[in-house]
Length: 86
Image (cartoon, rainbow, N blue to C red; front, side, top):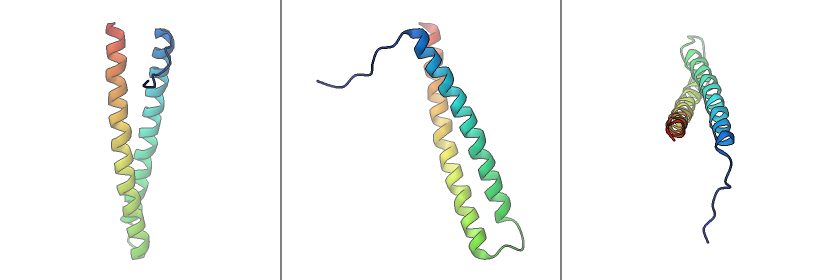
């Protein structure tokens, strides 16, 4: 027998979606700030190469996480739109 998600009232599901969208928005904003910070560190002229390489890696990781969070946020927006139609 496959596992199924518990059934919750529609109002509660809408609340979960709304809270998840808010969290995704805050998370995306935070990761974008980190990406900006790392990119700034990369371009500081007096940094040693190791610092620049680590900052570049941080910026790359932030780019990846921003993409993941943005995709999840888009999925949640579609879900929210579909629940409004029903």
